[in-house]
Amino acid sequence: MMIPTQFKSISRSGREILRLRPAWLSYWGSILAAAGVIGLWVLKRPFFDALSDGVGLPQELAGLGLGLGLLPIFARVLYHRYTHAYEIEDRKKLRMVAGFVSRVKREFPLTDKVQTDMGQSIIGRVLNYGTLAFWTGDDRSRLQWKDAPDPDRIIAFLDQLKSGAFVSSSTGSATRSDQRASPSEAHSISVGIGAPTLKEAKSTNYTHFGTGANDKPLSEMVAKRIRTPLGNYIDNDDGTVTDETGGLMWQRAPWGMVWTGNGFVGDPIKLRWGDAVRLFGQGVDVGYRVGATMAYMGHEKRAASAFEHGYKEGKCLIRAGSYNDWRLPTAQELDRFSPYLHSNYSDQGRTGDGLSQDEQYDWRWHGPAGRAAFQRLYPELFSLKAHLWTATGLGSGLAWAYDGNLPVGDFKVSDERPVIFVRKLTGSEIRAAKTEDETLKLEQTT
Image (tube, rainbow, N blue to C red; front, side, top):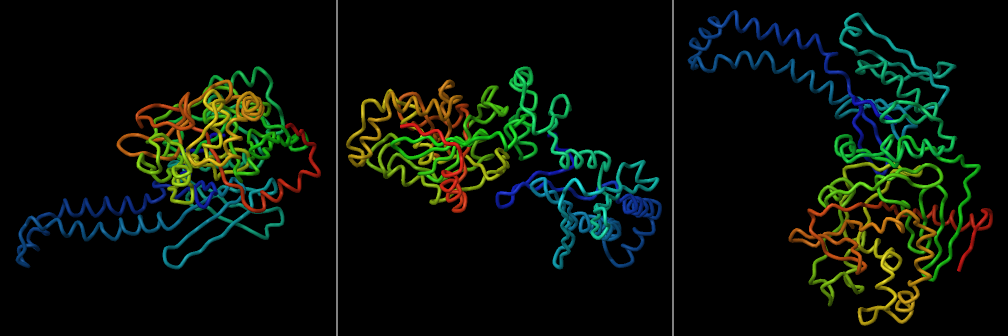
């Protein structure tokens, strides 16, 4: 879905906020007043020069009168514009916020019952701004966005949100979210229609896994539990995988690929580590001197890179699978992938790096059996053999990432690699996953 350029996308406590402010051109009266002050100063410049001489000031300070005349005009415009905000939260709630010290906030649920009225004066039509009024059928509640820029486009965008339609970023064609993608639609997505881009993420601070993706309706989705020696995983049938033991939910494929309702298509987006952590989140640095090994091995380095030890939220909001609190995983979190991704190393077993006998058994187990489970859970990653950035830096122009031999290796931050996203499950989500075990049709494998 294309977000109008008037909106600024921000993230607030895991929520997606689309923010809009009054149009600059709606302050045309203040612009005319400022022009009048400047014109008066130019025409009466001798008067201001004489006034400066009369009070004993240099003529160079005659412009002080111009500044004093313009200051209250500019101050009023800036104060009014930046103390009024119109917001859409998670595409489900409309909001108006006004004030600086004392504040007024009004919210309005965005449903298909909400009616929208638009009012434009003659000047408003010429300068393309107007007032939007939202109300329900009984007219008991009413919310106004005064002097909103390009109101026709905003109304069209809100109509798309209310209808649940998704709009292709290239063609503008709409499709319903309760339809499945045909093979031709899947191909069109794979070549870029509706796919996220690095430019979009940087400029709008918002990204997704396909604005043209057609998810299956909830009635057709069947979650499947996969049992492994490292714990239970759930294929949520929406492009995400839940790691019950680790309390994490993963995107099934790297960013850049598009979820069609049946799988992911397209190619991952490769980016430098600096862009990855700036956009999607950065953990603490873990250097070589942490632990007894140079490589990323042993429980010391894994513990040092834990999310809880310090994590800076990225600038880009990621919306996928009905959640928007996705982020770049730390090296400790991605380390749970390593037995699957690098089974040629895991087949040899691992000893002497702080692992218990049970943990060493788990490493040895992740040979042929590990590959089968990983292919079932993450088929796109399995076929891509992608090397992924972590959110964990190393220092001196290096960061931790996956390579083809070791679970995690150190690489130059200037390298371009794909990324995958993760989110922590809440307590209620973990309990819900366990209780659903009795109601969902589960596929159990050993």
